[in-house]
Length: 385
Image (cartoon, rainbow, N blue to C red):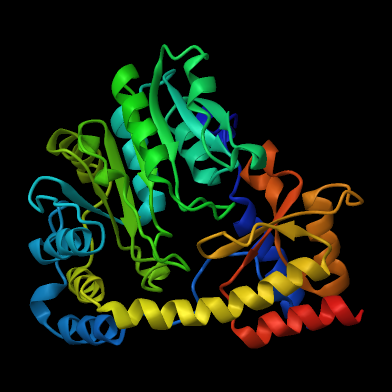
């Protein structure tokens, strides 16, 4: 037989962290006891109200059927309240909010809604690898735009203006930035909106980290007229420790939302109603939730900084979000080689920066998604060996 996969399968690889976690699992099965600081999966529980709502609603026989792709009104209303309360952004829950099965799924659906094969997608380098893989799966031409430490890990819009922009349909933006932790700037959002409007480019802002170790949450939709050209993804994965629940959304103008809904309605059959009701309960959490969450991450971040220093890395202390990004010593051959050495010698798993793009090659990333005791154990192994 001569069966071959589609070209889109050949255009991507299995996600690096998924492949690496298999290796870590095998090492653990052999008794290695790896301290995993690689994946950004929160290890703390969601708000109690979310868990209680899920359990209560799941007991009702009427809550287990298919749901409309647009999601239940209670969930969309909760997102509208969340944006009004925390960002000062008014969104019509009927026409401007589309629930999504997490941001990762949303990235592909958005790409399919706006990109034809051969169209160009601008993706940040370094940046979340799914922006690239989703673009390739949709048949887009991926054009990385460079983010550098020298430019504060911000887009250089003057440089972008000097590049050929014909055929560019979509630009991915992400602040607070993953993996560098660079906080959002209103001026960057304003430039992005103007850039998109001037060149008929959709600006897609991915915003899952704005409440983690960050006292100034921002949304690109705060820029006047942003919804004419921009959309924003958000989720409960990081802010409410609900990564496995796959609860997110995209917000924009009614036309964009309608196009995304057309794609989504042909791909999935909606989300579990009790989970949407539980997510709504989480979104209504008061400020005490964020205070307690960030107290935990502050403690973890302090230990992570000591780990970075022990590894000989340097970092910007102004970083926000769920990770710590550090430049590796000049003596190291590269980020992957260093990460493999740390795993082999210290039994600590960290993420090499090369997976985020060529500009990440001289960097590593440490996740804060491990209890303080495990972070301290990683520090002990590195400093004592």
